[in-house]
Length: 322
Image (tube, rainbow, N blue to C red; front, side, top):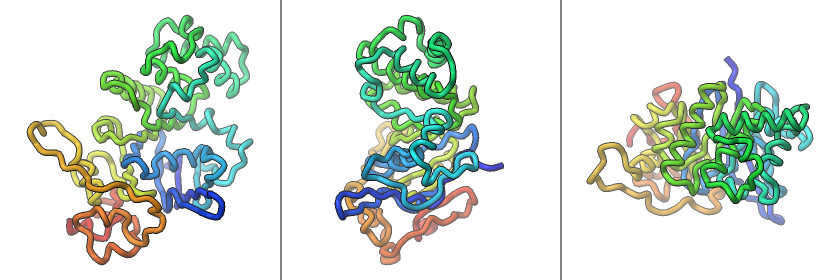
């Protein structure tokens, strides 16, 4: 069975004058139909850059210069903006971190939802309004008719995020990308949004790429996990395998730095240091300067290699000895 999305050896570069910075390099992964893939890592690891490149939303200075992006067997790499417009929103939709800045403050929710629906299908304004009400109800918002007349700033953070999810569903996408969709929401609302995404995934057989730094969310949501660090994939595995047998020192460090069930009284171990700047200039392992297990072999480029389990990939020459 062919994957819905297949990314091979993706490289994204950003240009400022004569300077070039490689944001992500040698990124490869797949997403099956109906699967939830979680991408995790600290800020600056390249998670958002990777997903924005799939949508062709890198901005004027950014470009995916190498690799392949296959969606339903169709090559997206190198497509024009006009061609990508037939895919964005319709086949692949995205929910951004901050719903308030993603929604236009001068238009009502109804204006924005109706425009989103009519841009992807030939329907009347009345039909688009009816579909808007249906979608708002689908994401758990009551009194949809009244809600369509309201402006974004009059809604709570959780309501705005649900509106964004409803708008993302307007084109009936096969793949939904959610970039830290619960940022700045309280814990109760976060749980509701995650449960909503899981429900939509099950009911619509919609694939989801979820970007997060919350390993608790990963444990609850993911089918598979891709761990990124300094613009590279350092580990990929099914969720249960990753939590019970992490291979990369960075993944191990992430798991040690979060509280878990039954961990009351246990001391959490933070990861010292930060994701390096200009990490594209590092010759060897990009995590080596923060890794307690680094040896001279880590000074050469590391490749993503298959571990003992055939579904487990690790970018570390020492994973069997750690």
